[in-house]
Length: 344
Image (cartoon, rainbow, N blue to C red; front, side, top):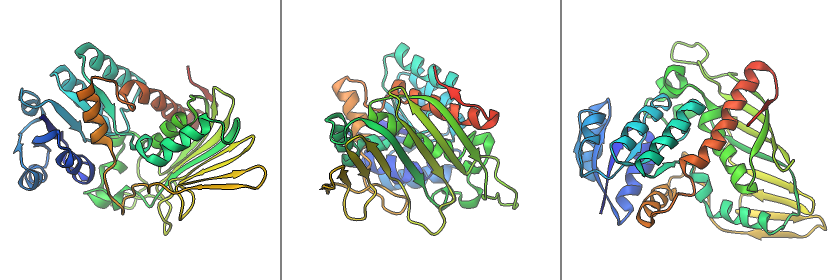
């Protein structure tokens, strides 16, 4: 039985990590740690396990095999590296970290300690996205030319345990806004779907509407629009937004090829559909996407546990996700400089 520790007991831990560990037959939640002890105690009372006073105390417990790092973005690297050095396997929430150097240090710590490092990029695990990747590789729409991928909703204040005073709006804790919260999902996804990598980025990353509790503009972006050029030559847009007010959560991708168009989570009744160049339409009814309102198992914990038990690298390993993070950092740099940024 794998024993898990939860570091950070906010919304993502409450809605995803803890229930999914509890549902996995190979895991048992051993403990929790949060700066707000009441949150940790509430989870312990519901799911079992003990409350630790500090992160160091939790990591010093030899009975804990794995940890989920669910703290604010700027703490991801520090806590993850400390956990890896303590001999724990680590599942870290996205975004992986707040700089390329931090991402590289996390991967290095995992390698040196021979431990699994996985990042919670759950979109790779949906049946629809896996089927879409297969169809593209089989040539169902020919050679990919362009794409658009979007993730937008009304903002993290509707999800966060702290509401309008959420740490997501504080640059000191989050470092980046929508571009890292939502954009990293779609950046990682487009690389996965196309089996390709972002090579050049031109972006606008901006704060258009969100306010802090004092009525001032938040210190991070609430919208990001990037033009990505892939190594293959395909070009597309990635949009991340916290200001889709009054609209249903938008989390779709459309791929345009030489022989047709593939719509992914872009239809109310079907997971995927292909519109062929000759007018034929092919529909696939599979699964739905998780939204802030519609919660079910993301598959992240199951993948994490399976990778450890099978002694393999996860399909969303830190090493792989780091490549997507480079495109996110390039988006911020491009917006700040007004220049196109090439990713080495």
